[in-house]
Length: 548
Image 1 (cartoon, rainbow, N blue to C red):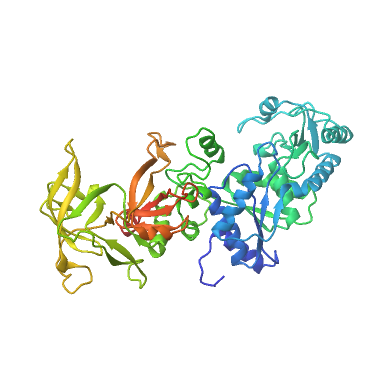
Image 2: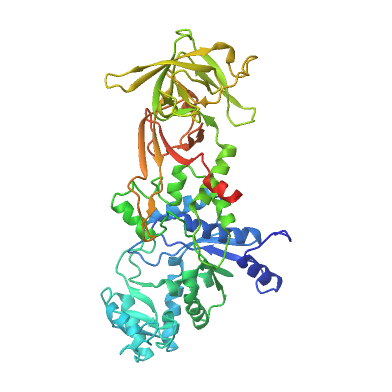
C-alpha cells in the first residue's frame, strides 16, 4: 500500500500486525454457507476480504461452511463461485468446512476428555428455557454433571447413529451465569441424519457454526477473520474454542458493520421466500439484490467494487442510500455503454415531403466525443415516443413536438408537425410532418436552432423488443420496514430499437438516448425475441445531492 493511501480500521490493524511481526503474511477468507445465492451485502465482505489480501500481498481463500446438509446445495456453491469470479476476484484455495470434519470431531473429543463438553438430552425448547435471559442467569442442565467417560460413550454412539435427530446434542461446558449468552454452554454438535453433498452418509453428526468456524480458520492459517458486527458477541466463544482445542494457529476475529441499503432487504431466508412464493422469477430476477440478479440486470462489477470502496468499512451500523449504488453504476455506464436510439412506446411519424422509397444512412456516435460511429437508417416513415408529442403545446416550457411546432430529430433534420391522424376512438395514430432538407446534422446549413431534440427509429428497419422497466423490489412502509413493491415491474412488448442492435450479444449494455441504460437479458432473449432490462435511469438525483 502507498504510504499516503487512506486506510480503514481493519487495514490499520493488518498494517500494524505486519509491522510488529505478529504475522508474516496476511491470510483472509470469504466463508459463505451454500444455502442461497449471494447478495449485495456479501459483495462488501468479498471486496474487503479479497481486497485485504491484494493490498498486503497475502492470500484469500474461498471456504464453504457446509456444516448443515439439510439446507445446502451444489447449485448454491456453483452460483457463489460465478459471482466471485464476476466481481473480478480469484481465491488462493477452495476449501470446505467438511474438509475438516475429522479434525473437528477430534477437537470435540479433546474437550470431552478435558471435562469441557458434555452430551445433553434436553429438548431444544428446554434448552432455551434453561438458557436464561439478558437479565437472568441460566440454569445448568441436569445432564451437565455426566462424567467424561459417560459423555465420550454417548458422543461416540451419536456418531454411530444410535440416536434420532434432536434427541441429543454435545454442548461446551463454559458458564451458565455468563452475561454473554453465547458463553452459556453453547451446542457444538447436533444429530442430522441427512446426506451431505460431499461426504455422503459418512456423518450423522455435524458441528455447529460457532464451533466449526474458528477451527476452520485455524486449519487454514487465517490471520484476520473478518465478519460482520452481529458476531461481535461471539468473539469470546471463538477465542475459547481456539484456546481449549489447542489449535496450533491462532486466528483473530474482527468485526465491521454489514451493508444496509434503503429499499433493499438482504436476508437469504427472506429472498428465498420471494423465490419460493413466486413473487420473483428466481434468484436471478433482475429486481433481486442478489449478485446474480444485478448481473442479469446489467450492473457492472467495476461499479459494485467502486460502491464498496466509497461506503468504506466501519463499526458503526448505518443505512446507505441505494441511490449511491445507482450513481456508481450510472457513472461506469456513462463512460462505457454505447448510445443507441430506442423508442419504448412508439408513435408513427410520417415526413410527407421526404421522398418515398428513399433511405439514407446517418452517422451516430457510439460514445459522446468518441471517434467510433455507427450508421442509422432514415426514411419517410419513423417512430417517435408517444410522450414526445402533444397535439397542443401546454406551456412555454414544453420543448417537444406539437402541431405547428418544430424539433430536431437526433443526427438528422429539423421537422415541423403539420397535422395528426386519429383513430376512430379519437386517439392519435400518426403524426404528419415536413422536414427542412437544409438542416441535416453535420451539414453546412445545420446551424438553425430549435429548442427540442427527439430520438427516433426508422420504421422498416426497426428491431422489435420487449423492454422491462424496473422499480425497487421493496418499498418502505409507514413504520420504516420494507415490503414488496407490487409495481416493481412494467413490461413493454411493443418497443422498437434501431437496427444497430442486431449484432449485440446477450448481456450487452447500452444507453437508450433520453431513456436510460438497458441490458440485453441473458436468460429470456432468444431467436426472434429480444428482451431488455432497465439498468438505471439517466436521471442522477444522488449526484445532485452530493453537489449541495
